[in-house]
Amino acid sequence: MLKHQFAIPLLSILIILTSSCLVAGQVRRQGVCPDMRGLSNVESEWLNYQGRWFMQARYENDGDNRCQKSDYTLGPNSEHIVRDYEISNADNSINERIGILTFLQDGQFQIQYDGIDPINFKVLSVVYNRYLITYSCKNLPEGQYDEDVWIHTRANNPSQEVITAYMDALDLKGISKPDLKYNCHQDCAGYVSPTLHSKRQRKC
Image 1 (tube, rainbow, N blue to C red):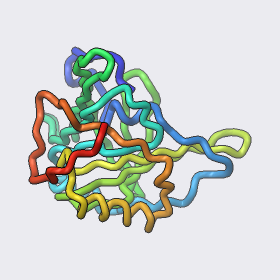
Image 2: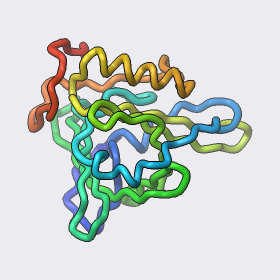
Image 3: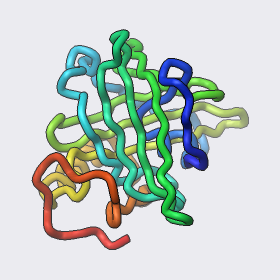
């Protein structure tokens, strides 16, 4: 999870989607990474992909932060820029990072963080005006692998219809739902949802 604020010039910072939600939190399992196929048209659909996404759940989110969101834009040099934001539950400080997304083959994209090795991700399922599911997996020695899943939505407090849709998508992909930990989107100073959302609030 993010622990520091970054005040480095844009071009010297490399990172992306859910910066606070990417580096930690994998679930370790026995065996090898499953054959999860990403969507092949993500790059051609970039204009639909742009905008704001709110992180609803991921594997092993430790709850240290809330109000996690990412804004996807096109940078001045045609880079795919992501600006990530979260609030610390410990002291209510705002943590932000900026990064660059690079598209790869086979429905994957790569995220390069400042000071760490790049990580490859796949978009497993997306309805651009509703939800986004991304996935990462890394094989480890001794027959183990680390797996992570992120669920983002356009609304910070999505409707039950949207929740049902992304839960059904997880089932279709064979993703373990009991491992998901939910992010809180209450007391989020500094942003509002860009779309209509439910009056029902998930308890934090």
